[in-house]
Amino acid sequence: MDVRGGKSVWASSNLSTWNVGENDALAEVVQNWSRSLRKLSTKDLLSSAEKGGYAVGAFNVYNLEGIEAVVAAAEAEKSPAILQIHPGSLKLGGPLLISCCISAAEEASVPISVHFDHGMSKQELLEVLDMGVDSVMVDGSQFAYKENLQYTKYISSMAHSRNMMVEAELGRLSGTEDDLTVEDYEAKLTDLRQAREFINETRIDALAVCIGNVHGNYPASGPNLKLDLLKDLHALALETGVYLVLHGASGLSSELVKECIRLGVRKFNVNTEVRNAYLDVLRKNSYKDLVHIMESAKVAMKMVVVEKMRLFGSAGKA
Image 1 (spheres, rainbow, N blue to C red):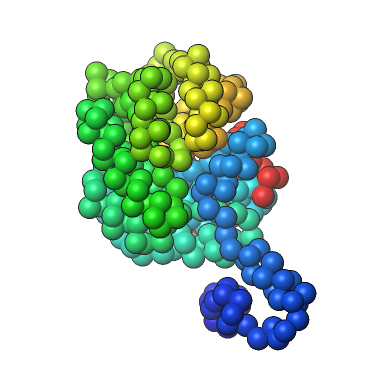
Image 2: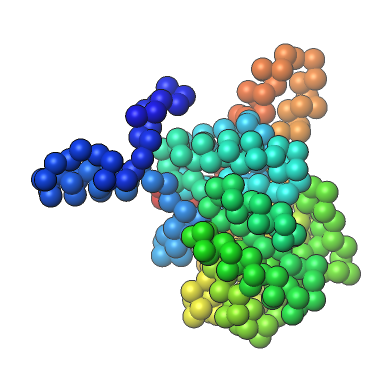
């Protein structure tokens, strides 16, 4: 038995390493107990969301305070959650950031998975696949359709061989997320006919749809989501067994979020609002000690995450 962070952790869940004798009943009890210790995957979380008619929040994290805020919110609300890592934060935090996320997910009392977002290079994704995450997003939206399909198909095959879920984007979102900006003229809605071929060829598990959503802040006129397209995409998703994902959830009204859930969105990506809560604390507490600032930032981020979990309908679903 290994001890980490004051908690006892079994070094192995392999039944053969435990001395349970010849008692089949005892062996079954131990095996069932060991299975309950394993955290659920991203695919498990989205499958439950599809069955329950709610969505799971994927919250971008950049540091320990962000990770702890998401976990604390999930445990307080008894909600599943996804710790999501963007290439920009991975570039700064490296494998250690992913390790912190994995450790936090394993120690949490509720189902939490770890997801790598917007993998735009083959080399980067192949490296991440060996870091222990539960799922990856293949972002080939910068490519022409056929090139995107082949790129996604290759990574999907590699990820599935490691039993990891794959999300991919079809179409392209405008807006800014961390150091990546896509101009309005570059944006493109998801094509329904292409989506069928794309899903069938790549064998992805989740589709990030482009229905007028944007990364970052929406224009002053507000969001203009194509809900009829979302409805059609959900029908396709049910037929093909994939889950729908909506990036750019920050800034959407509560009514619009609930309508998107009703029309099939099972994973919402959230970044801007949580990040702004952190930055606001830094701006307002520049003369206080660092420990106080870190704790205040964690509390502020947790409040935003709790609000989102309640809105997405995932609270109480752990």
